[in-house]
Image (cartoon, rainbow, N blue to C red; front, side, top):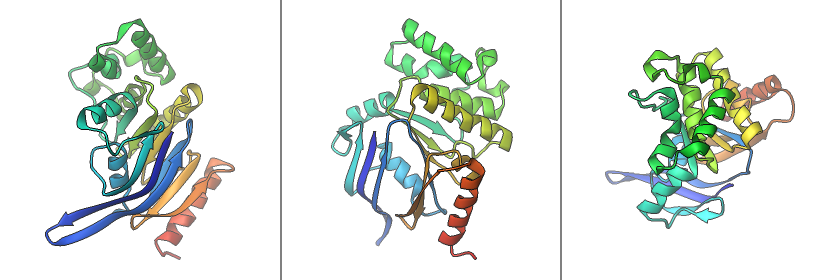
Length: 247
């Protein structure tokens, strides 16, 4: 579903060139829930921004559903972002003047094709994520966890190839974080959603099928969950300590 090959990205600051991504290779299959973890400066956000087509890269390939994104013009890239990618941000990015239901429907509203199918999908997502009772409320009147579940529902409205989640639990308490991660899992199991998540949180990452550890712009290690979640979290913490040079 998502394939990144030999991805390189640098930033120029004055006369200095800073290499941020140094030949990233990764693949995410349909229905997988994959996380990327790493210390600040490891290239996590840059990787996500390259995949979402918000910043250019110097070398490499990014394919989404078999389509190469590198050579698309701005109009085509805008279409990819609206129709083939779903986004979930740390700060929710909901529209304050719209109700929960209207926020969820926004991708269909932008395309001008809400229709009965769109309304039915909104109903299904509201029920799936336990937010039907707040569908007519506004973002200012609901909790952070409810806002993020609304954002997850919105990201699914166009049945995207991949949901890109940028620190989706970063502003939430532990109870709300778990509810949001369980929303991702439900979307994966019920809708075969594919989720690619950047996170600092080992608890959230421990629910994933795989976790990719980044260090200094390169893949340090990929861990696969084989047993219980809590055991996988312990494994993640051990590997992160080793990666950072801690005893």
